[in-house]
Image (cartoon, rainbow, N blue to C red; front, side, top):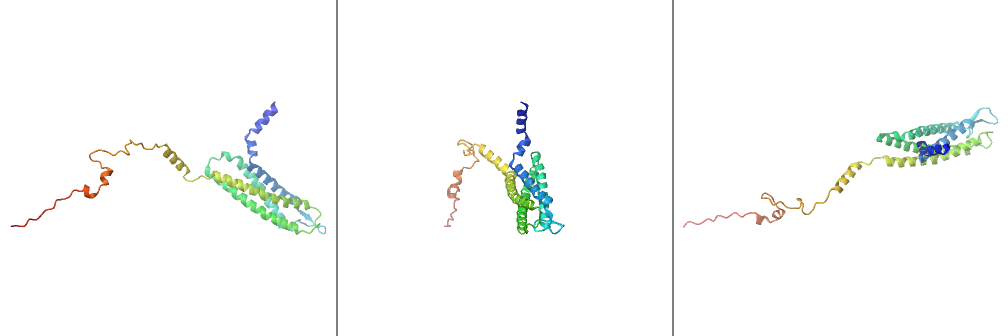
Length: 234
């Protein structure tokens, strides 16, 4: 009975819920793909030709291609680890501004990495396509793996950018939203004035003015001044 209880505790733990998140799964896959890209070229990406003992890149003997793949893969792998650690402590962030800045940074980096891997895939595939066949005895499988997982990394980072954009839309506060909501609540709770309320009943005091008297013609309300007639002297 102890094993089922431990499995239930594991299923209900925060770590399990964190690992089931789509963003976490995408980061793990992005890290694994980056690891494959830079490790495959770092270990078997530099080989010597049949007629030379000098190590050269297996991608058309272009050391820039191998260096780019190794560097980009290593940096992408480290960024995935950093953001995984930040995601694990995301619920402990109390500041709304810091949380919004983190989501914005996540979106920007995901877009940049998607563009970087797109250019890297095009560059690596071009160099591998132009490489002479059987120029190197070893390393062809490593080159194919690097090109393939560079393409998969494009899709992974695009999905990460999409999820980061969705989270950013949810976290960005709408200006004056709280004040407008509170004003709507106040307006809906006010009862409409009744017929017998003092607002609609004209006051009957001696010093009060009614609406009917203000609507009368000035000829009726203004008293006429008597005219003085001049009598001729007899």
